[in-house]
Length: 221
Image (tube, rainbow, N blue to C red; front, side):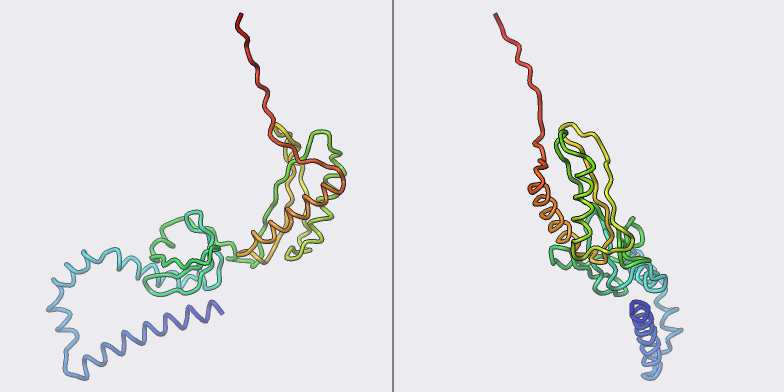
């Protein structure tokens, strides 16, 4: 679908240019003379509109190379969004807050972007959780594995897994890693997963500790 969109867009703009040139010739304009006579003017306009021309060239490159396609989920400057439309000068994206942003195409070719769905429609995510130092590590990992396998929106393959990642200042820290095709709305899945983890810990008397600090007070005589 994305490839068809790119081919359609390029064909549309190419036909528009040819039709414009042909139309000028029909009404009596000599296009070659017109371009030669306005060469100096075009140079001045080109310098003034350099950034706009850059956006146009970037738009053509995006449509030809298909590095970014319609319906791709991308991350630009820390903002995750889905591509809705690609035009020659701008690209329209929709953020997770349901806000539309119009991006100049040069931003997509000169900035570093993350394309979450460039090769696969699924991506890898994680949920972090810490438990009290008195907790049974094996039981915690078993509960986390059981919960993540019952969560809707999480793929069975690759198989989700749990990592014991660190001895934290106040907790034993774990990571629940999973894959999902719901890349754009994965925050909803992560939220539901955290709720299930909290309830499962509560049922098994596993506590999530508060940060702890030791304060020494020096008394004065």
